[in-house]
Structure formats: C-alpha cells, structure tokens
Amino acid sequence: MFDLSSRQAKFVFFLALIVIGFFLFFPLYWLVISSLKANAELYQVVPTPFPTMPSLQHFVTALTTGKLPMYLTNSLITSTCSAALVTLLALYAGFSFAKYRYIGRQPVMLFMLSAQMFPFGLLLISIYPLMSEIGLLDTRPGLILSYIVFALPVSTYMLYSYFSQVPDELIDAARADGASDLRIFHTIVIPISIPPIVTVFLYSFMWSWNDLLYSMTLIVSEDKRTIGPGLLLTYLNEVNSDWGGAMAASLIASAPIVVAFMFLQRYFIQGVTAGAVK
Amino acid sequence: MAVIENNVGAYPVSPHANRGGLKAGQSRMGLLLLLPAAIAFSAVILYPFLSALGLSLFEYTVEMMEPRYIGFENFAKIASDPDVWAAFWTTAVYVTLTTLGTLVAGLGWALIMNQPFAGRGVLRSLSLLPWVLPSTVSAFIWGWIFNSRYGVLNAFLMEFGIIDFPRAWLSTPEGAMLAVVLTKIWLSIPLFMSFFLAGLQNLDKEQIDAARVDGAGNWAVLRDHILPHLRPVLIIVVVLGVIGNLQQFDTIYALTGGGPVRATTVLSVEVYRRAFEQWDIGFASAVGVLWVASLLPPAFLYLRMLVKGN
Image (tube, rainbow over all chains, first blue to last red):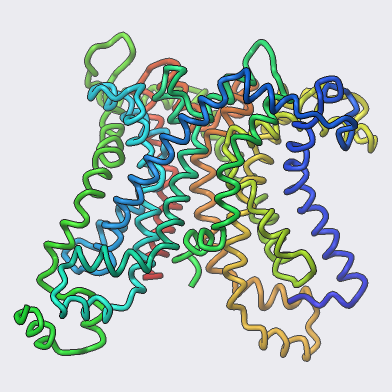
C-alpha cells in the first residue's frame, strides 16, 4: 500500500504506529500490571512500570472473599439464555426475510433494523413499568427478555445476509424431494450455517455480558446482580476504592468473553461488517 | 408430492424469479417463521418505544398512581430548563469529539494494519480487545489511569514536565470530559478499524501501482486513491459512530456519573437520572423523545444506505 523505502515515510509510519498503538495497548497493559501489584506498590505516587514483586493476592481476594463468583454465575445464566433466545428468534426471522416473498417484507425488515436506533435508555423507561406489571421486575427472566432489545435487530440482519447467499437450488431440490419447509431449514440450511449462528450468539452474548444500564435498573436484589453493576458497586463505592481488586476482578470478568472472541473473531468481524462493505 | 414438483416445473425459469427463493404461495410460511421474532420485537422494543412517546404527553411521577394527560407541558418545561439544554450541548460536544477522534485514529490504525510487516496478525487481533471488554471494566481502566493521586497519567505528564503538580482530572469539567471521550474513542477504534480494513480489501492495487509509476507519492496515493475508495465505508462508519456515541451511557455513568456537577451529563445520563433517580417518568420521556429526534438524521442516512445496498 504505502511505499516505506524512504526514511521520511518510515518515520511517519512508525510514529503513527507507536502513537496509536500506545493509546490502544497501554491501558490493557496497565490493567494487567496493576492487577499484579500488591497494594504497597500499587499506591505509589510514581508508579513502577513492572510489578517488582508480582502478587496474585488481588485475584485470590476477588475469587474467595467477594461476591464476584456469584455475579459471574448470574451473568453467565442471563447472558447464555438471552443469547440463545435472540439467536433462535433471529434464525427464523432471518430465514423468513431471506427466502420468502410477502407483502411488507422489506418495510418490516427495515423497521426492525432501524429499531437499533431507539435509544436503549428511552426503551427502559417503559420496559421498567412493563416488567413491574407482569411481575418480572427483579427477576432473571425479566432481564433476559429485556436483553432482546440490544441484539435482535442486528442479529436478524446478519443472519438474513447470510441466508440470502444460500443457493435457492439447494432448497428447491429438497422441496422437490418432498421435504417440508421447516425440515429443509432444520436439516439442510442450519447445518451449513454454523459460523454465522455462532457469530450471532456471541454478538448477543457480548451485549448482555457487557451491559450495565439494564441490569442495574431492572435487578435490585444482590443475589441476581450481574457483573456490570456488581463490579461497580463492589469496587468503586463512595467510601473506598479498591483499585487492585477492581483490576483483578475486571480481568476475571473479561476472560470468558475475550477467550470466546479470540477463537471466533474472523467470523465475527465478517458478520458485523457484512452489508456495510460490498 | 407430485403437485409440488409440478409447481416447480410450471414456473418459468427466469433468473429473476429464482432469486425469490421459495416459490410464491409460500408467504404464509414466511410470516409464520417471522412471528416469534415479531412478537418479541413488539413486546420489548416497539411497545416500549411507542409507550415512551406517549408518556411524554403525561405527567407521571413517583407519587402518582396513574399518569395524567398534560399535552405538551413537559416540552414547555424542557424549553425553559437550562439543565436539559446543557445536556444537549454536552451531548453535541461528546458526540463530535468521540466521532472525529475515532475516525482519525481508526482510519490511521487500519492503514497501518493494512501494511505488511512481521507480527501484524497478532497486533490486529489484540487491537480488537477494547471492543469486547465489559463497559464497567473499560471505565475502571480509564478511571485508574486518570486517578488524581496514583494515576499513571499524572505521573507521565509530570515526568515529562508538562504539568508540575498532579491534577484531579475527574473533578474538573474539562478533565472529566477528556476522560469519557478518550474512553469512548478507545472502545470504538476496533470497530472502525474492522470496517476500514474490510473496505481496504478490495482496493485496486494495480491502479495504485500505475499511479506510483507516474510518480505519485504516498500522500498522493492516500488522497487520490485510498480515501476516495473508502468514501462509502467512511460515511457508514461516521453514521454508525454518531448513532452509537449519541447512545453511550455505561462508560460515562461508571466513570463520572455525569459529573463533576453536570459536566458530562449527556442526554442518556439525563434521561436515566430523571426517570430512575427522580422518578419523573413523563419528563424523562419527553427528553427522550427529543433525544430520538436528534438520532433521526443519522438513522435516516443509515437506512437509506442499507436500502441502496440491497
């Protein structure tokens, strides 16, 4: 792309690489380093660039004394359920949009997609009384249902884009063999669509796992609290700020999503940028 | 079964007809498949949205059993409420700075990551990390960097002699704004980069080589070939960025709580506070309606591009 044979070009390139790279990676580095410092080293006015005496104390404390394991379990339950629910709904809707023709198909699809722009905070104002009315306030099912808001529109669109590329001949051939539509979808289309399905699952899982706003509003009881508000209330309250603990707990809370993402990032990026880049 | 086979054969096999997928007469099946998602969508997205629009015309506070219709009174109250105006202004500043900052850094990083060099693959993967971290975690990281006593930012700036005493960044309006803006830019670079990299994939390399033979330098290649090629992606990224930044709540709330005083109270924080701290649901909805109105222009652009794309 760029010709870096001249010294000047090299200089500009590496300068940009260092500046942006530093901005991107230093915070991550600092997160890891800070979590490994014991309090005596952590709270120094001139910080040390590496932990002189690395310590896992903050990790041990976070996992044994705090409520972090409970928050993690809660997040795991709500995120898995809502991701499964969103994926299931988006599967059928995406297939319907991609392979059937009916009046209002395109407007309905565009409308659903445009709902991505309804501010989540505004929807919450009405979701709150709604959940309260049907008795789902402060319950996991209530939170799981509310999480549909985040990911359903985009998930449907991602699966729609993928299903649109499934050749019609494949479906027509199975139809000619007498298979029903649902059967075709379940036994032929879904098995060849595992990568996008996993992408959509991960995408909606990520939204729920990373959420703060909905969880802190719709869940009141401590025993159902998820990691977003859980971390915030545990480590940064008015009285004391336990930064070492916050860093260690942050790493623990990020680990599942980071690992999943690293394995699936290729599909993930294709899915998210699909449609925008042709 | 024979009926279906006959049907398949009976249709003229034009490529256009075939694009329709499953054949006509199947629309009932299509609607049936759409039904579960449509119900869920109506229940948790459409109904709450319309209901919030409606509530903006009601007085509904925590002491009231039933909302009371008051017409446009909430909007009249907003018009004379300097706090809401300030929230609009703060939002404008926040959205402008975050979108511009991410655009420059994201494009720059994508161009760098598009250049072949050893270790690029690893670097590319790692640079996606800020995207997937929980928002509370991002707020923690930046809160710690900006910490007034032990923060590494103060240490850096003092080391290089830029400041001579530690600043309480998050306690000053400008410092707090800087912190929430940098956090959001940091979070969004991966997404922007991914879009730009996808756009760079189908760049015509021969055209660039030809330009080079004609004596074009790096700058000319960037200006005359790469940027024009990225124009559609650039537009979509800006629109998506504006939409996302207008909505941002979690990191701001966790980092500054909208403060100090109201310096980082953007619309999302304002609506949240009115609704769930002061329990003035009607007023919060009215502010929310204006918030949606500010989202309409970018939303319209986005949809228009999607329709064109189809």
